[in-house]
Image 1: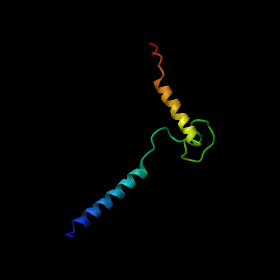
Image 2 (image 1 turned 30 degrees about the horizontal axis):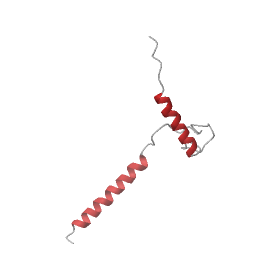
Image 3 (image 1 turned 180 degrees about the vertical axis):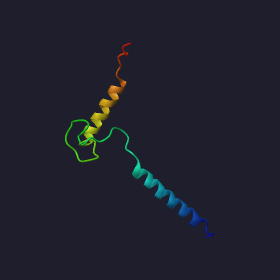
Image 4 (image 1 turned 60 degrees about the vertical axis):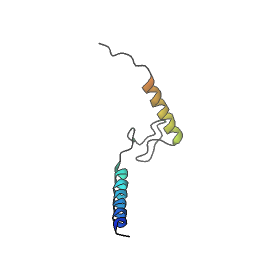
Length: 76
């Protein structure tokens, strides 16, 4: 091998380190955690937004329905 493979491997390893670092610092999509389930209001551990997958799915379904609901015009 002429050394190019080693340089490429090192570059790939560095890219993977940067990618993992960026993902670990990424803010989750959606609403902030409040300490309570955003669907049923149960008390939660810090940084949790929902009790379980069912509450999360129900919350997301409600949000989609609210986004699609017709809005009343603003009073002038």
